[in-house]
Length: 343
Image 1: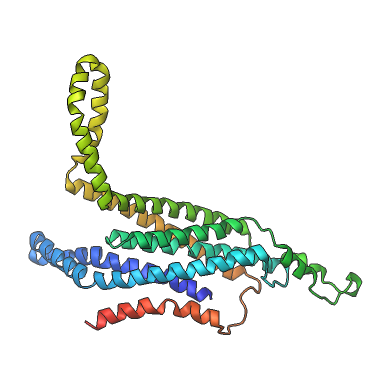
Image 2 (image 1 turned 120 degrees about the horizontal axis):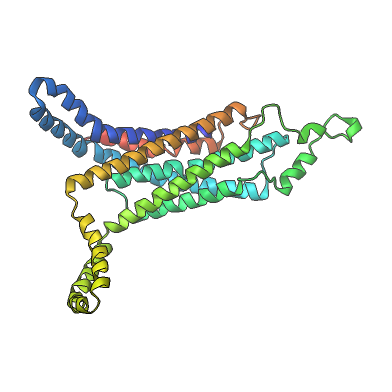
């Protein structure tokens, strides 16, 4: 089943790389290719033409498939997180020793990370392309919150009474110990420190919440209701301008200070479009770098858990759950291939 989580994160990263390829790298690669031959002016024109062709013919297909992928991973992770919450609260890990049970808690924490890191990452890709809707934002937020609950429940290693009872009932060949194995409650030589995973999950979750708030605020800022409310506020301000002029004579000093404060948003809004675009690109660039950093950390934690686990992953037999976990990503991949090859 962990192959499914690798595929989930891999698809999100590949989609991000393709979006940057069509929007960024195609432009600069074409510019550098024709700069020495045709000059910088003609190279810029050809680079912009190549970029527009990619945005027109390639990006819509990718965004369509990415939208389906976002819905698939949200519904899939909500179901997985709900199952994880149930098993953590009620028990049922069927561990053979305390080490396996501790490793299972760390695995649940990693599953929680897969419930909000790739989800918010993909949502930001859709939002950056202007294709995010309130439906997909609400669905993604629900997924992040449920995954946050899973990470919260596994922040401390507190086995359920059912799991402890199962450990006590494990038979052994120690006749002097009443037929029990006294090493059942001993940790293995390669102990997985759950605090490494809890700390990583907490930092990634806080970052994802900040990005979610940013996406919601930006979506609200560009929504129709926001512009209607802003128009009403501007009309209300203009209707009160005469009262402010008459009050200027009575409280000149206080009004002067208020006028200076009131002109701050106007001065900010007077920034030219080029500067605003540069600031926006810088902000998105910092966010992408932070996302890639947290992705590297998540991959490191998952690799570390696999290297130190003790019998948590069973034999390589395909069960119904494993098949579902792999094929859940097939529709979005098939849709993208069809759109690219069928037109």
